[in-house]
Length: 146
Image (cartoon, rainbow, N blue to C red; front, side):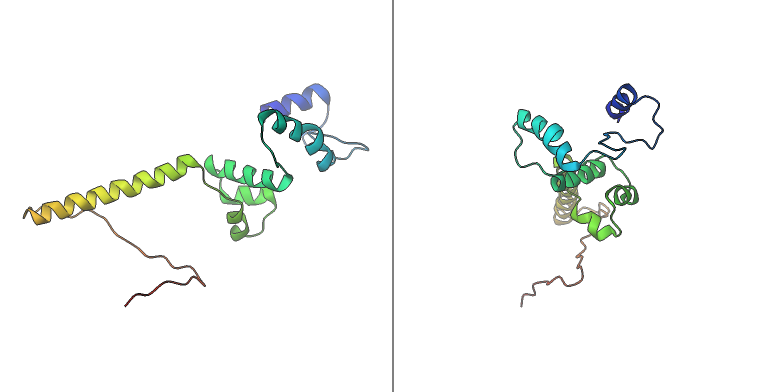
């Protein structure tokens, strides 16, 4: 955001806080396709990133905000979403969040393993707060085995 503010201040001094960051012609915002072709795609090409489009940038924007802990209501407002369900379509957790989830599961499984070992050995160590919960969302089929 600091780079955008600097760009606006240097190139469009005196514009109000609601002035366009990337102005186009006739006091309108820049055409998004032109913005992509003249600004975003050349940078992506230099970085070796292919297939970038506005829709992909919406997903990236939401996912980056999610990884930074931005509230879902703020993300919805920025992307123009009216429901959390729609916003979740645009939410993709990164590698760090996946790693943290894996480590949390590993810690819980290790606690359960130690508890089972202590029970087998006849120890009276208090049980861990391990709990397993099955969550079923509407219209989700759950396999049943006999």
